Amino acid sequence: MGLDIRYARTGAGEPLMLIHGIGHRRQAWDPVISLLAEQCEVIAIDLPGCGESPGLPTGMRYDMRTTIANFGDLLDELGIETPHIAGNSLGGAIALELGAAGLARSVVGLAPAGFWTTTERRYAVTLLSSLRMSTWVPDPILRQIAAHPRLRRETIRTIYSRPDRIDEERFLGDARAMRDSVGFRPMTAAGKTYHCHAVPTVPTTIAWGERDHVLLPRQAALARRRLPKAEHIALPGCGHVPMGDNPELVADVILRGTVAADTDAAATA
Image 1 (cartoon, helix red, strand yellow):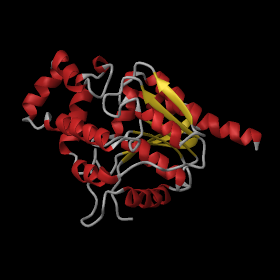
Image 2 (image 1 turned 120 degrees about the vertical axis):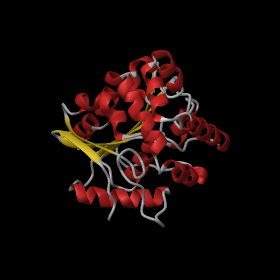
Image 3 (image 1 turned 180 degrees about the vertical axis):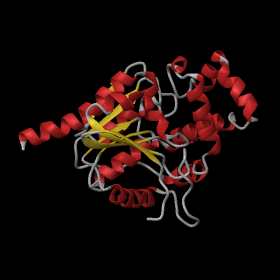
Image 4 (image 1 turned 90 degrees about the vertical axis):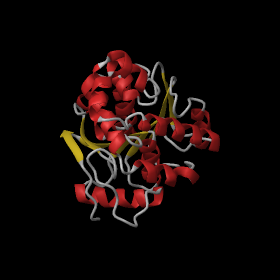
């Protein structure tokens, strides 16, 4: 496919691919990696133009259709046919689309994008764009913010309900990733007309943080209506990126929705 997709691969067992949200990076999953790797081979990727992955080649779109085609090629390169897939935010929408395209063995979406009204989408993009703009300061100032616990918490409380759990190193890495993401603007532009209508044909779980300030928890109701056969779970006390708020709960939801669901399906087949 000619794309340079960076990833981290660890653990042993059934393959489980993790997909982060817009402007984030694969390290968003670090709080749950060790828990998941006890039962799975975990592959956490950086989306094109995010983290360590360079942007898409000139002329290639960041829309969902292209994204799914690129993932098909990526799975071929990794030697994986249909992994379990978990995603957060944009990554959650991608996971659902991959499940509908027959490229996933099971799907877990954590606050997946696309179950919004036009106003809610604009609100989310404005909020995240404002957060990104706050990182456009000289690196010494960014390091000062990262080193100051109160400033650090205030900066990220829109995406984490427990910002106190994000240490200086993680804050600085996430801020730099969002600042330097060449995929952020084209991804938001491509999402202007996106609404998630994907219906995976595999075991599917939708989990939503009850304190999500980006993709509001009321959007979970629309997800329930569009995906009535999926398992829908509320994540008490969690924000938009719940892996950092409650790693144990999120890891349990992912494992029950992927490996355990696969085992149960095989047992009843």
